[in-house]
Amino acid sequence: GRMRFFGWHIDFLGFSASFACAVHCMAWPLLLSLGFLGGAEWLENEMLERLLIIGSIIIASYSIGKSYFRDHRRPAPALWLLGGIGFLLSSLLFEHGSIHYILTAIGGFSIAFAHYVNWKHLSCKLPVLR
Image (cartoon, rainbow, N blue to C red; front, side, top):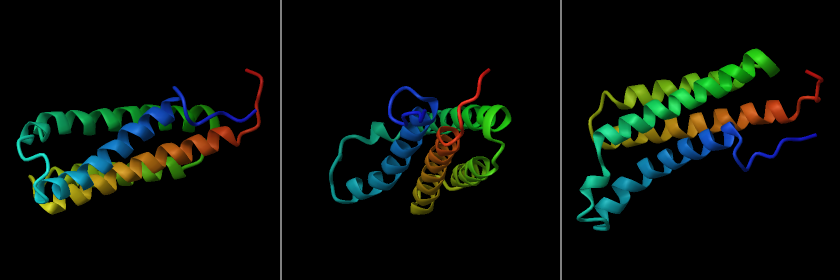
C-alpha cells in the first residue's frame, strides 16, 4: 500500500522543519522592514538558526541516506539534499544581509523538496517481504 506523507513519517517531519525554516527566512526581513515584530529581535538568534540548520541537515541525511541504501537507490533526493546543504552552508558566509536570507530560504526549500522526492520514491515502491 501507499504510505501517507502527513503524520509522523520522518520525511514529513524533515520536510516540515525545512519548509518552516525557509518560510521564516523569507518572512523575517519583510516583517521587520514593515515594522512588525519591532521588539522581537530575540527571535533572530544566531545560535538557534545554526542549530536549526544543523538539525535539518542531520534529519535529512539520515532519512535520505537510509532510504537510498535500504530501499530505492535513486539519486534525486540526495542531489536535492546536497544542493540544499550547499545553499545553507554558503548562507553562513553572509551574516545578516538579504543574501543570507535568500540563500537560507533556497536551502530550506531544497531540503524540504528532497524529503518530498524521497517520500515519493518510497511510497511508489512495491511492498516487499522483509
